[in-house]
Every structure is written in C-alpha cells, then in structure tokens.
Length: 343
Image (tube, rainbow, N blue to C red; front, side, top):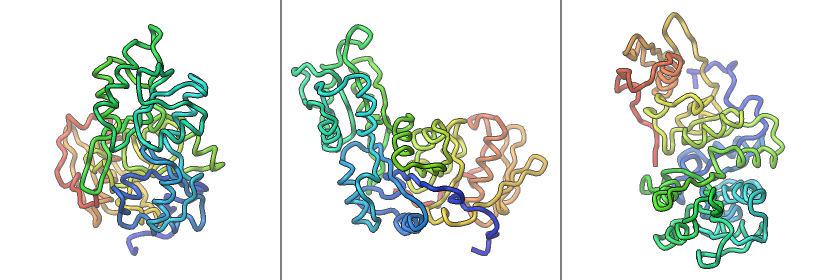
C-alpha cells in the first residue's frame, strides 16, 4: 500500500450506489472469484450495492440466495435481471396477458408470469412474441420453435422477438462457454431477422437499476467492454472494468470509443485503493511509474513500473488518446501480459 498517496480518491469516492455485474465479477460458475465477496461486503458498509445480470436462467430470488451463500447479504429486490428488463420492454409492445413463446429457463418464465403473460413453448400456440434468454438446458428444439414462430418478418406482420441479452460468451468454472448471443445468432441465421435486446448494453436495464436504488452517483462494475462498459457509457455513469472475467488486457488496449471504462482494476480489492493519477508529459502517459508513448506506428514502453495493472492503464490511455487504431500499431507483448485471475 506504500505505493499510493492517501490523498488520491478511490473509485468509490462520491458514489452512493455501486452496481455490479455477476458472471466474471462476483463469481465464475457457482464459486466466488478471489477477493470479490470481501471487497463488496466492505463497499456495502457505507454504500448501497445492487447486482445486474444479463443471465436470464435464474430468478432474482435464486440469484440473491446464491450470492448470500457466497457470503454476501442480498435480497431479491437488490438483483436486477435481464428478464425484468425484457418485460418492461414488452409492456409497450405486446401488453399482458398476451402469449409469449419462451426460449430459456426459470428466470424468464417467472418474470413473464409475474408480469401477467401467458407462457408457451410451442409455435403452434400462435404466440404474440418470442422472448429468448440463456439457460443451460436450451436445446435445438427450443431454437427451432422460435424459428417457426418468427418465420414472417416483423415488417410484414410478424411477431416481435426480444432477446434478454446478446453476450456471445459466459464465464464458467471450467472456462468460457457460449452465451445467449450465440444462441440468438443461431435463430437469426435461420430466420434472417434481428432481435431487439433488453439487457446490457442497452439502457433499460441500467435505468431500471438506477431508479430502483434512487442513485444520484452510480458506479457500475463489469468484466466485458461490449456489454457492461458500453452500457454504462450509454447511460452516462462511471464504470469499472475488472480483469477477473471475459475481457483481458489486450481487449482493454483495443477498446473502441464508447466502450472505455473510467477505471481498470486487477481485482475488486482495488476499489478501496487510491486510484493512481494519469500524468502526461510531452508524448508520454505515466501511471504510478509505468510510462508508455505512441510514436508513429509503435507503442513504446518507457518504464514498466512496479505493477502490471499500472502498465495496462498507461498503455490503454496512450493508445486511446493517440487516435490510431490498434491494428496498425506495433504493440510490445509486455504491455498485454496477463497475470490477472481469470475463470
């Protein structure tokens, strides 16, 4: 801790509500990620903490029970799910008690029934919309029923198609597995239509969470640039990318505008550490002794510093501010070295 000046703010300074993604942030599979539970419990002593998940396979109550079993204290109302966002979206398109063809698990079925909809699993029941969310038990037969129901394009009188989320992958205890976006893509390939997405990175799920917690200054923690960070940017709140899930240092360096986090952390302990300032002198960007510059087509490390996370922070800022696409730059391997925990 001697590396830091206590006068510098932490990522939590001024924040009244912290919202955290789950997969890749709190857990991977059933087990908690290192340092996540104790760090979030420390946050909860002084701020409200809520949880947002694109995973549609479980109910808010079951998610809360899982988090509590890991050592957190969470009530169902403190969990905002993509099925809840999907029902909000559907209310303006196909009001209850319309019939929904559900592709997904209990989390999606329960929210549909709570919202007053009739649930079916068959296209033969003439559903008024298709709602698709991730569940491990989703099979080819489920995707086929969705395809049958969606065979008529919406502009020609076909029914709406809502996807809870479009995450291509999902972190599990054994590694990275296909996510809902992959399954939605299979239906898209079959029918030539695009789904309307309710969860991250779209704003409804964030707006629901911010309103539910009455937040005035929100910090969102995620592990994916293309859903978590993009969504936070779209809704105008500060964000943390933590390197315990899907996206790695090489992805951070290449992050496009609109998907760049406010803070980059190796793990959630760093929420409570003063965040190092970014210093600029001439063409160099320096973070806590790590210094990087972009000269022409080369990214140069002037000083590695004492921690890889600071080198990633300096390198990302230098590349982002250069305005040069990373694919035309020569980037030293040291800059995207990856000692951080991953599922």
